[in-house]
Image (cartoon, rainbow, N blue to C red; front, side, top):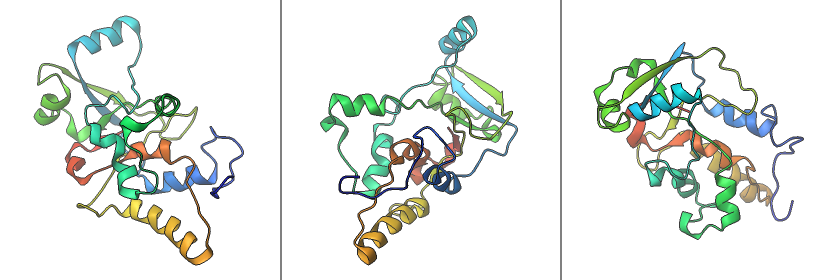
Length: 196
């Protein structure tokens, strides 16, 4: 399509397509029986009173550098957030994220301080009933880099794209990278053991 090749996809929402399976293979599944979410008292009362669960797009998250991490690391697709058109921003807002952590981070003072309203909030624990992917819901552990400039999974993505252009003259693009990039973060956040 246009100037790029990509994996053929029969349905953009099917998590069984080859590209989605490729990204799933790069990320560790949640094997624990529960995950934790730190939040404010206000949010827990809203959740209980309205029987809803709050999720957000990637853009308003508390770490602005996180939004561009994969784009900057890979380089080819990077476009600064402030230069995106309204159409591009709306597209980015079509994916919703909920950040949790592994059960071994339950009652972790640092997590309370960072995500539980400066230690005045709560830690919710959720049972993970089924780790399979269904209904456009993906539950995976975050892939963290090892050190600055060393993120093996993102290096593999770069290697595939670069080898195709170098060896075969093929310009290739992962068409669902904008969905999956939310599961890769800098090594600086590894202690959070995030699950999304």
